[in-house]
Image 1 (tube, rainbow, N blue to C red):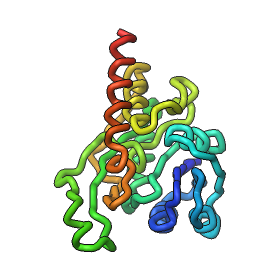
Image 2: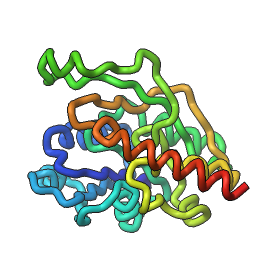
Image 3: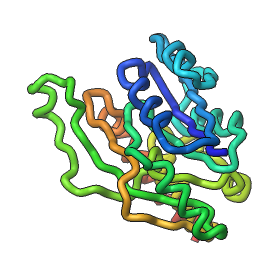
Image 4: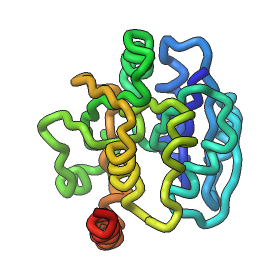
Length: 219
């Protein structure tokens, strides 16, 4: 089974599209878990109406929210999807097939493609600039990780507020987890007015400095 975990905070504007993009995948054995972090809108109701399991956490950082979903996951494989992004057709299958080709692979990473959300006003669209090239580096929608990996190297850092993905990928390297990268786009990352990375740049930079300092101290 593949457990798909979506961390959501007042995500009612886009989460329906995110969930449906997963449900349209050509994958039979799959569960979907939506973790609502202090939601005050109808995110939870939308997710439940679409058949997802939901759990609630209070005022958590993204790492803690992702970990809460992981605790509930029953699958052998874990896929995180952001509540405002869209999975590409056959994106999950393209990731999962790499495990079938080589059963020693423990995590598979793919590429992401950015797009500006089409419903925005022209003025808002003018403030956003999508990357021209597809890229590696994202976690949500662009990786499937065997659940046993989290037992080997631990779960997401619950202190970091924005840099949990970078910190986790460093641990994957340090612990010699066998990772396969495929040059295939599996997720489309939506740019809009309230992207977490855009609205929390200062915190993101602080977390990156903390991660770098911790890495240097371990050498």
